[in-house]
Structures are given as structure tokens and as C-alpha cells.
Image 1: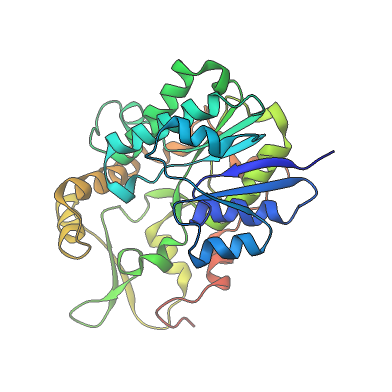
Image 2: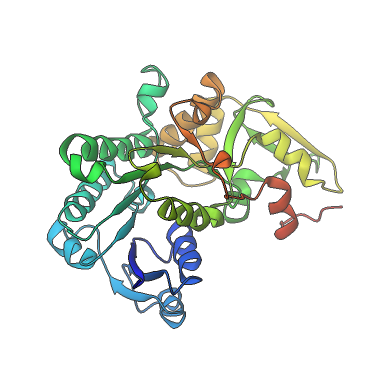
Length: 319
């Protein structure tokens, strides 16, 4: 049997890159078409050197151009990046174009959609400004409502907090010295409030198992996380050889930090804060029975926080 063509959007990013790397290890099974905005950059060229077919694709150009990029695909791994433009309307337009294009591909057998849950639904209308969740959930609704044939072969993956955030954004997720020299993690959660966490580098393993499962996960929503952990638990597990403390701060204080320290706009700071408040007020909403729990999928082994600590270097020396 000839290898199946899998198109991966965002192939040089953390999610897409993990999917490409995993599938390239099985050249007899998969032919990987890696889509990226900049096919000449080193990351894209590295994928080409490893056997991927690299093509340029801009999600803003519309469904016609994307259909050309998707031509002949047996599976598509689809994602959008809200934070690139920080615009819900732009992300929704991109997601709809992807869906419209995918629905035209006669060879398509499986559509995997990287998503987030509906914040209004899960909070009972309490939180209405989590735009980077809502935009993705609206694309999911669009596929269900307007593209039923595509939905019939769609698997939706809900992405959680990444362990890698501690590497890419240490100022937000790792302790920093306070005025007394004590390394302090200031966060708006109570010490026992948990969030779903995963190593984003494991995305490829999940997607491969989904593709191998055929129709088993069609129309299903998978909650992708290995552990539900609090930020206080994660701090304690780091095992620093210096004094540390966890400090709960208010939502207003957290928003102000996001604006002053991280340069977020007021709108984005509220968006980011409200997503965290959902977990503070409603618990681990990813554990709901309506979602398939990725950590329970047969054959899928996901790294936990202890694994991630062992594998990575952190800015502060540990014992």
C-alpha cells in the first residue's frame, strides 16, 4: 500500500513540528506535506532534508489556495494561531477557510482539528472574554453545522497548558526573586487549583495514534493532557536548592503584571486571565465525561511533569 499523504499546517511550530517529526519516522506509512508561511527558513529546510514535502501556505489567502495545498491529502492536521494576530475574527476566518478547503478534497479520509473548548458553555456564561478559546470553538461549530460530511471524519483535540511554557515563558511560569531574594511564583490560582498539562512535544504521538485508529475517533473530542497539576505543585516538584514560595494574587494584579511585564494589551490580559479563572472557579473542565481523555487512549504514553523536569534545563539550578 502506498504511503498516505498527511498535510500538516504550521509545520515549523511546536504542534505541527511534533506531528511532522513523528510521521516522518514512518516513511512507508506516511508521506508528509509540511505547510508553512516561510518555506525558505531554516526550520522548514530542515524538514525538507528529513523527507517532508515543504510547501508555502498562507491561511489568509482563502479556501481556493488552501484547496490546492491540500490536493491529494488523505489526512490533514489543521490549526490556527490566535496569538499571531490577536484577533478572533481573523482566526475564525482562517479556520473557516481551512474547513471549506478540506471539504473539497475527495481523497480526504481524516481531518484532525486543533481546538479549544467553548468558554461560555463551560462556565455557564460566566466568562465571555476568552476570545482565543471562543474563536476556535466557533470554528468547531462551523464544521459541525455547515460541513457535516467533513465533521463526520473529524477528530477534535483540545489543547491544555504546556509544560514547555516554563521554558519559553519562564518569567510567567517559574519563580523570580522578590525584594528579599526569595524565588516567588505569583499566580492567580489557589495553591490547589489544577490545570490540565502536557508536553506539547507529545502531540505527534497522539495524532499518529488517532490516524491509525481510523474511524474510532471520528466526531470525538479528545482532551489532550497527561496530568492535572497546580502551579504550586509544579513549583514544589522542581526541587530548587534555594528558598521558594508560591503567592496567590488577585485577577486584577495578574492582569496588571501581564500588561506591564509582558506587554499585553488590556484586552489580551483580560482574555488570558479569564481562561485561568475558569479553572479556579469550575475545576478541571477538561476532565468532563463528554471528552475522550487522551491519557486513557490505549498505546499512548505521555510525558508527565517529572519526566519533563528530567529532560530539560531550567533557568535556576535545582538540587
